Length: 141
Image (tube, rainbow, N blue to C red):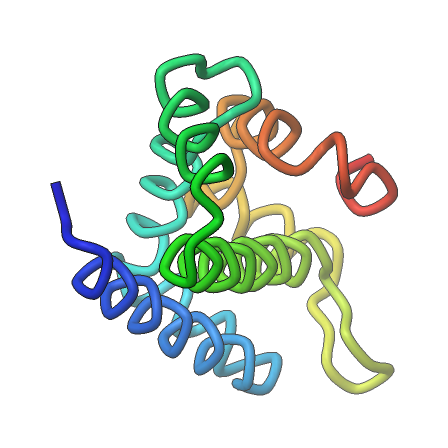
């Protein structure tokens, strides 16, 4: 198991990477997401392995951290919360075919892009709902 400092370093690295991706303009964001397999792999892995409310094993660890309320646990929870927000924002951007009046894909092109590159599938929708649904109902639905 990772020590707290190693975990924080790893999560902060993921935060930097996700913030970089989110800082890209529309075309660069999509190009990076589609042409760089580690991006989709990370998103898939995050959804697959991040705790869901129904995941009792991971919730026990979280409950132990909450009962301790040390500086380390607060730092970890804050970093993980930031990472969660970034990942949700990435999926939100992926769900839109248009960001501005000049930055957009036509609906047929967008549908083909999402379908052929497996950007979304039923498992991702279920994972997104179980991770974010209770606190981000408006964004998820």
